[in-house]
Amino acid sequence: MIKKLVSLPIMLVGLLVPFLCESIVWGLEAQSLIASGSCIKPIGRVIKSLKSRQICEADEIEVNDNALVICYSNQKFINLQSGLYKAASICTLPETSTRRRCTPINRQDCPNRKGPGEDDNVPSIIQPYGNILIENRPLISWSAVAGATSYSVQVKNGDMRWEKELEGTTLTLAYPEDQPELLYGTAIRIVVMANKGKEPISYDSLVVHLLREEKVTQINQAVEQIKKLGLSADEAAYLDLDAVYMSEDILNKTIEMLEERVAAGSFNPSVYRILGDRYIEAWLPEKAKSAYIKALQLARFQKNLEEVTLAQERLLALSQSQLPTRINPAQ
Image (tube, rainbow, N blue to C red; front, side):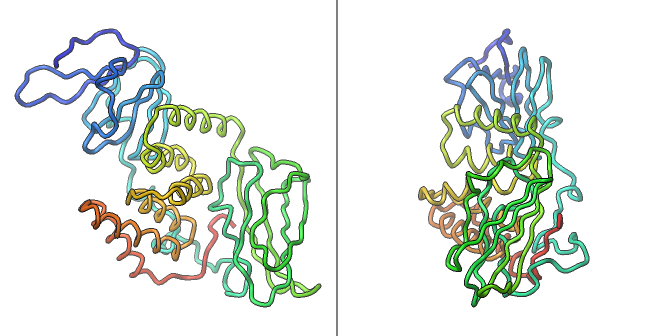
């Protein structure tokens, strides 16, 4: 149905349909026109007043009031003021060179030095994933060390420092409630030491950065808007929420979120593929491989040819990479 351009809080001006000579106007105030998956190749989503619409590259966005745009293509989220915007100019495709990160696959982008996990007999820190946090009480986990009878976890944040010892079978530590919260906008050093009796065997360390409080607030507000849209849990996770978290490379939060979808029994191959991508960025190639294999199995069963191709490409790239010692680029 053709609608005239009217003054709504936000409207999307669509492509010209070949057999019509007028523009189709998608109004976010019209519930019947709001549907997830309405774009064949969406590059983002516009959110306004608990309503949303996915957008394609050729769309224009007319805003008569503030609106939030989540970009899948470049993993950004933007608050738009009143005006007319081209979707492609907001959700631009990133330059290839700026997208490359130090990963087990892109080893040429890594520092030319060995990482802290050179010896297999070290308690390699697994969580926090990545080097950017928004939680000031993160979970800490590490790999087992043969012969270790206990592990010591040390955390240093500015003038604050604490240490906790755990028995050898314990490989996870919830941030202690009796310790001060980590400070926003600061660097934190985490050290996990494996002990045999009273003697240390080996250790691993990780430096992470907690974002500024105002940035954390912006991210949490965007997350809350997405959660109120009534989207499917899988779609919200691997598209919208992942884009918001990865706007600041927050691997820890997006991996935990995607792992929750897996634990809930998701059958969506995209969930597993994106989780595999995030594992790669967190230097967990074996976990990534398992996620890609699951994505491929589901995609084949569902005859989802696009996801079959994407999962196969990732498994091939992973198999062709010579997986080196884990490197922590921010160490």
